[in-house]
Length: 147
Image (cartoon, rainbow, N blue to C red; front, side, top):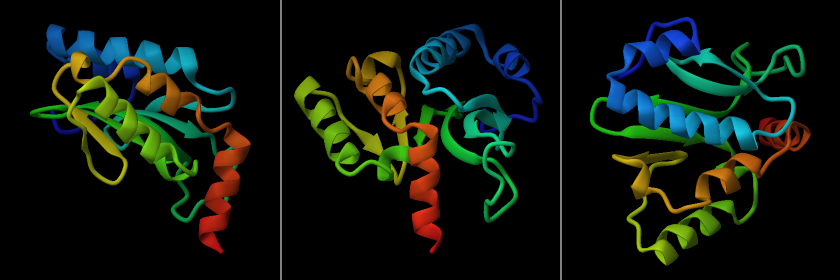
């Protein structure tokens, strides 16, 4: 699946084959358990997204809520999109260190960690990323990049 037209998270999960649904559901629970207060889960960009609602902050360049994190079951991998990797000084270095210490191969683009199974992720790395940036700090970082 390379993006979904589903309007709801439940609908998105229902579209997935059972084994892929299990992986996304497990990761989703981990995100929800560790998500700082103020972010909202919804479907956007064809994937499960965790965003700063427009009611909280509406001064975005594209009129869309600020994307904090996202989850997707892509065609050949899963994607964990962490926009906050660059919001926290040193977070990218910590993520790279966690993978190295766990003996896991990190497949990461600018902000997307790609993996094929949950065991490809070091224990604790997702909660560390999810918890890293409270909403106010994320907004402040966004504003500093727009100046």
